[in-house]
Image (cartoon, rainbow, N blue to C red; front, side, top):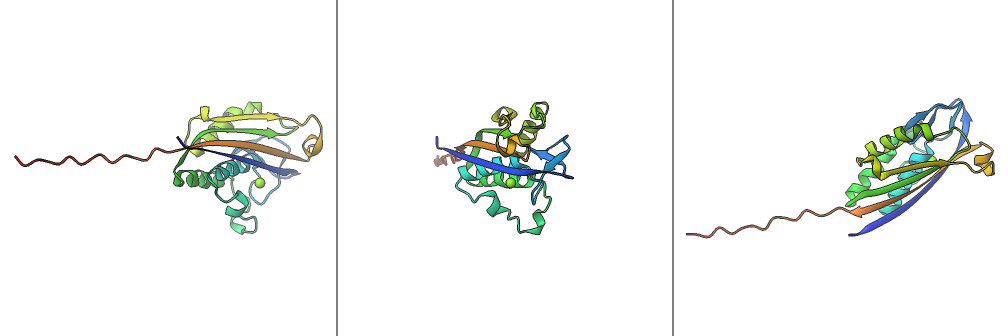
Length: 173
Ligand code: MG
């Protein structure tokens, strides 16, 4: 079995007047993540983990912020595209794990919804999607509540190629 691994990291600034999206799920919070798209740092990190595993371009190259059509785009579009690239490269997702680094809001109540959403987009069972959140204990940009970061790692396995059934030669009787 051939395996591939990929890692992804992303961080976005928290800003007033924006809805907060993490893992494709709307999170109740007074500020959201700034970005050309919806700013979903978790999905962006997962995209880069998947893309890295298949040696693909990174998310910024696939969906340049300079392109107007990605303005406020739901990042689920990016993950769908990354998932398709994984499939087209002949691989499947064995396991995905991710961690969100945020002082607030508390994400534990959303774990189920986020894992379910990511699993749905990737077409895998929820058990293949790990998720957790942690704080930076008040240190750095995350500790000062200036932004939210996310990291992800993906393990892919080569999809079995379909064996063609051998042609049985019919004998003339
Ligand atoms: Mg990003």
